[in-house]
Length: 427
Image (cartoon, rainbow, N blue to C red; front, side, top):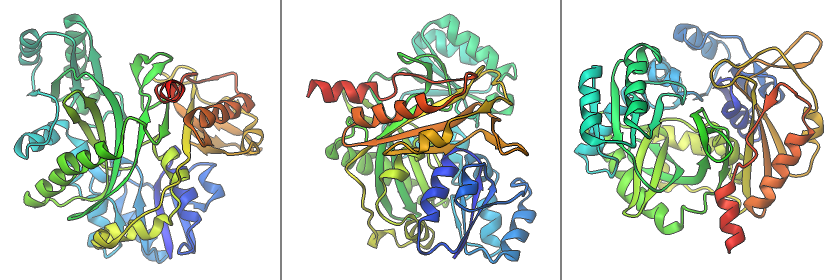
């Protein structure tokens, strides 16, 4: 098969690494890719926002399957356009991608189909939003309705913080994403990420992970796109996973089908494990980043047949095998991230890190200059992944890889995986 993978981040490098290992994959193209994906296939320069150009490339190269990595193109309807052109595409339709594209859409779906989630209100002006906050009190969560690259959520501990977030969003601080605001109750519990493949009717549980959204050690600082992750998440016991499938994933799939917008692709549920059980924080309609970087190394089965089964509606007769080992990734970010990351600095030592046992390096915001040097070109730049029998072992290997990198302009959190390591130590 000839396969086109769309995207350029750490998630896409992890997917390219997994797809390129499939016996079914003859040629893998990545648009636009990065220096890491170039080691797995052929990077191609296509404007992924230009859907006719993507379709023309697919026809020229006889592409059998398109895998869409990031959420932006899905929300813009690239899967619809490719499918209409007769090109098999892994990823939801524009209508189904509203599960990520509009937080308000998802909250209303939860209300209609009794899916457990936080109490909420939707607002299109600051005055009404502030009145709701004054009535509910703090702490409270303020969210931009639209896509904001993982930065559209403010965990407001005081009314002043909440009102400032409302003013920022309605004042254009997040562009069109903040034209509508969703305000939610502050849920108490432990967060986890859970993934399921969906074919419009059936859902196949994949695996769990735990992300670290806050910028700094101790889970403080602003929210980011993710500073690290590990899989599996010990908080997600088999019993809890069964509840998530029964109470959250399957009702969502049934509700979307009932509405005439069946969901095909990967459903990424951000969960809060509360005293009352699992509740949905929000949905993403693609593999997480950096969660994908710890899921792919644990997947023992060939990923390509699984993607095809989701496209073809035959997941009910499908299964996947997962390694019992843990995987943990640490994100190396550019100085100034998330506000104003500094670009252009040279990164050395990637080969040293890759040479370590049970370590993988996935590129994200990198580029290569004419001399072959790897340069920082984004906020989150590299993912250093460690594998081990325990999360503590995986953590030690990931940080050994971090220490092998020579990049004074980069930084990372030093406590990725702390909750799981604490659980392991306490037995």
